[in-house]
Amino acid sequence: MKKILIVDDSKFSRTIVKKALESHLKDKGITVIEASNGKEALTKLKEEKPQVVLLDILMPDMTGINVLLEMKKQLNYMPKVIILSALNQEPLVKKALELGVKEMLVKPVNPKELANVIKKVMEGGG
Image (tube, rainbow, N blue to C red; front, side, top):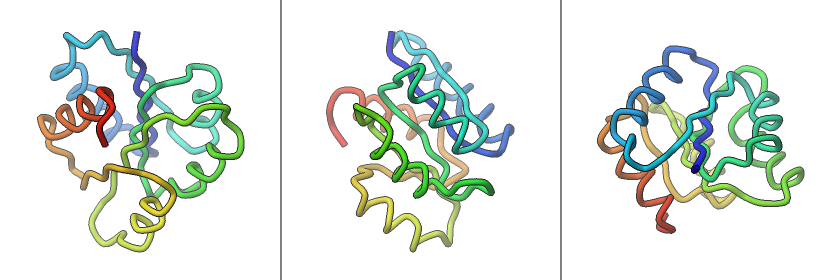
């Protein structure tokens, strides 16, 4: 069973993304896990070991960049990370790309585009 972790401080955003994933990837045998902040995400990463992380770049307690840095320090594996970003966050997105993130989607995400990026990442691309 493949696991995808959605990390976003907005419950609305998490719900939209989760429904999009479940709708477009139902045949891929995935489990969707949610975290509402960076600290919760780090705990779930250690416990659940998801293959893919959809990471909001701008969160109040810990930015996506801080989560990425902690992932590199704390985890003995590195999931594929897709950044979810609103417009006008170019400096943070640039830093995320420097840290090895391969994909970035602008919020609000298009469900079909999200599903295609997830499939590509899960198959080893991106």
